[in-house]
Image 1: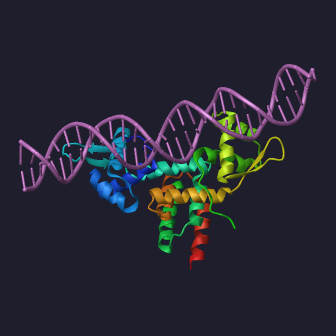
Image 2: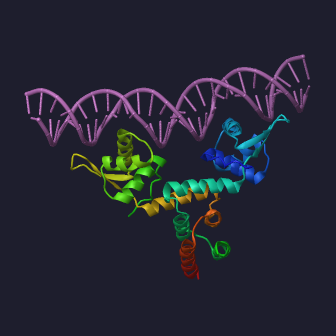
Image 3: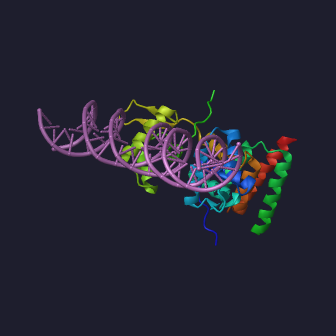
Length: 128
Length: 128
DNA sequence: GAGAAAGTACGAACTGATTCGTTGACAACT
DNA sequence: AGTTGTCAACGAATCAGTTCGTACTTTCTC
């Protein structure tokens, strides 16, 4: 069975996002991608990814000389984990108030609102 | 004019929550309240609150011997700030995907879903 | 084979947050 | 006046996360 997702730190999350995007990648790949945004040394990324292996955030294939890394947990479960944490820390554990706050500050367009509406309908159906 | 809300750390947020709840309070008050949950020394809370004064997260009335502290920024703006941060870090800046994720994992009851629906309707009206 | 290039591993420094002990000021009590 | 209690102020230790220099290994190229 899947274990609970591990809460990644900010730097770890940035790396995970690249891995989710690109699929299995080498340190070089991740570093190249990450360097577009912030400025970060190669060994910094390497070290971080090594730590992530220890923590179980990523898996590593060492068969080639350049090791190939892969995210060990999906994007969805990780998002859920981070969301729940914020909900507990800042919204008294209430999903409702979190969603309300996000909605009223949202710059979501009409199409996006429709998508949210659809999910809401589905949820309401499940509830009865 | 109101400055942008300052992002509080976890410990600072815990203290802010007490201040939002209780209104202006002494360190003793906050410590008492906080001690229900976690176990934390008095001077730890004091130090944290002193730091928060420097950062501008709280204001302090020093006229009495026991200083009285007050949150300098509201709960709403702080929540918005934290939400935006998470949105950028983990949801590619998309409010929609954040809300969708929160909704599908939510344990919100029917009444709460209705409230969300109402906000959604209001938003949709504003958009056109 | 010698040297350059591309990797990994590791340790040390630095930062921000957190925690708490100690000190000194002031007030209340006897 | 002296003792006890309450408070703010500070300094030091610790911890997690991050950053990068350096050393070592493997591979490639001439």
